[in-house]
Amino acid sequence: MTEGSCHCGTVHWRCDGTPELAEACSCTICRRYGVLWAYGLEGKGIDVSGATQSYVPRNKNAFHFCSACGCLAYWRELAVGPNGLRRIGVNLRLAQPEEVAQIPVERVDGLRDFEHLPLDGRRVADYWF
Image (cartoon, rainbow, N blue to C red; front, side, top):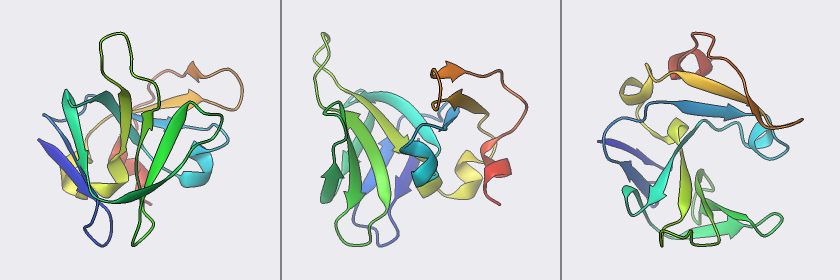
């Protein structure tokens, strides 16, 4: 199990197991937030809790921040999928570094066409500094 929480401890997320990949996206919002995402389905492998405020750009995904300390904890789709679940991404930067340090990072060119770039050997630990 992999867990993360905001700075003040109000908002938490939990993933069953360890994510296989982290994603570093360069889209107009992710590059501003500086997050590393792990993806899944809410309620099926990923659970979140705690009071949040949300920001909803373009009415597709809601980005959830801790209401107290402001840390970005996760995003989730507004629409429920055909399977009755919503896609969700949790911010791996809220986990303890040693828990996620060795997860490979996949880069996504979100500024152009959302192309997934080849893995280059970098891991989450390479993004801490």
